[in-house]
Image (tube, rainbow, N blue to C red):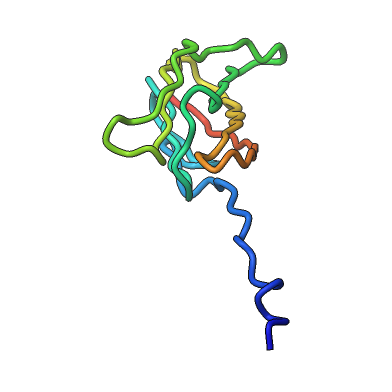
Length: 112
């Protein structure tokens, strides 16, 4: 009779990348910011996007101003200097409001 109660727990939810601008593996003419939408609300203090620029040294091009959109806690934004042509690497690490952590990354290209 009570056996099923112990098996029904709270599902562990993690924030997964839903979409981004620029799109993963996409090509743009220029980029001034990277935006990412996740499947869960995020803790802004514990969520970051790091962007490195083209070239063999992968110089950091994000401005360190990662923040959530005040109107959407699932939307994370960072400003970048993305005018130079080449491949940019985006690495993200987020903590959802239920304290679960996840991370990942993708690339996009800037072509003139």
